[in-house]
Image (tube, rainbow, N blue to C red; front, side):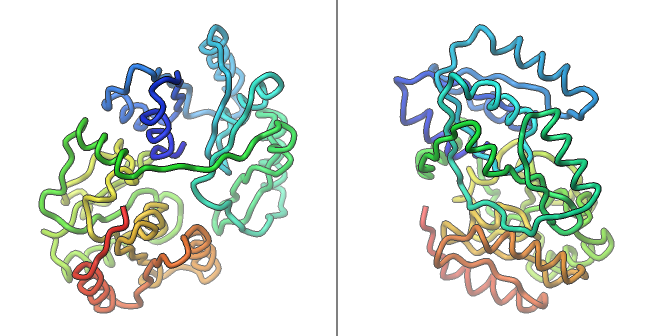
Length: 327
């Protein structure tokens, strides 16, 4: 789910009824705390699933939705989304299905292996979803195949985002602030996903905080994860249940490894820095991670990849002093 599109839609169309259907507990908490308008209902479906408990989760969803008259379904993801894509396949015969893409799809190479074949079969048999297993470095990415879109008569719809509307609404409801700090450290899942070594990552983060000053930083963990290092836990934090793309006006600079928030920050004119070249990462994986960022940038947007701490420091000083925010 892409939160800015969802909020833009429901806030601009008060005469329409919406069901916001989420699986990630922290995102459910976010919407719940917003006290959504009266034209919105919020429901949650199972999150941590596998092929063993998938049928139980499907029955839960069916029991939840069978008495609701659903006129259309809009989705935003191009990978994963097991139960969501299964649900779309169940409804597509009699319901209009829309797709709104906030970013271009990933363009990794197709992975051919026994593991990739197993993933393909699980999605096909358990979730009635055609995928293309893609090589995303250390992992196999289940990218939704064009066959799925064609089979379910999916209609592409322009993605509309009103950043001013969304950010003002969220700030009004949650009263967010940056504690007079100008840099957001975007983290979470880097170690868990196997992108880099924990010791190496910790040393680089410590060097960045020492060079720029800890008093300039806040930290933001991905809503799906909660694996901050001890050095990161020392920083004041934006609650993980708050999506980073609804707080973009709060900070001048965003620093991370390969978070999608770096893309979104760059796309609205913020100083966006990846520490990819500062870490000891395999060349192939580094290329894959950089490509996953670059392919989704708007024309004219920039993510910086400094090769040293001093270069990073210079970028922050130069960019933050002359930052033009396009929100």
